[in-house]
Length: 151
Image 1 (cartoon, rainbow, N blue to C red):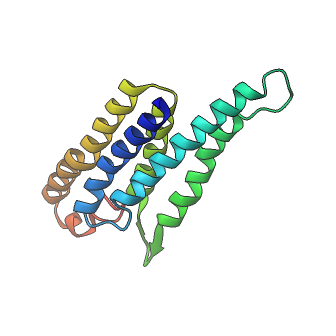
Image 2: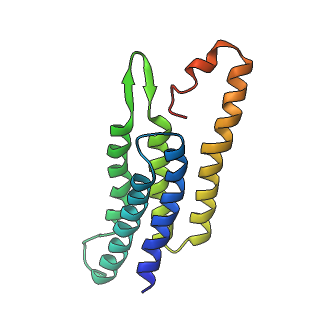
């Protein structure tokens, strides 16, 4: 029963980050972030259970969790767009990467860390964006290019 709670918490935390991306009208939103957190938690839980079953063998299922990081890199790379000398989607890709880490933290029962990381991520996406916009506007003509990194 605890595993179901972990999967639900990972999904919720990922969705919370995705809400900000939805409000910012980015292509990866609530569902994408929720699925990334859920998937990474599920793969991590599977690797924990599999590792317990194979103790004493040369098989190392804990590698499954490390491959989540690699897999998320492919999803992140797919969300980054380069056109007309502008890079878009970088912040979304970074958010997906953090969402995967949060899902893994939940799977390892590091709930406080996962919740704290979610709050910090939302702070970065919302409040640092506001600060970034104000600084760019004060510097002059750069405000038009403020969305280059998908902030």
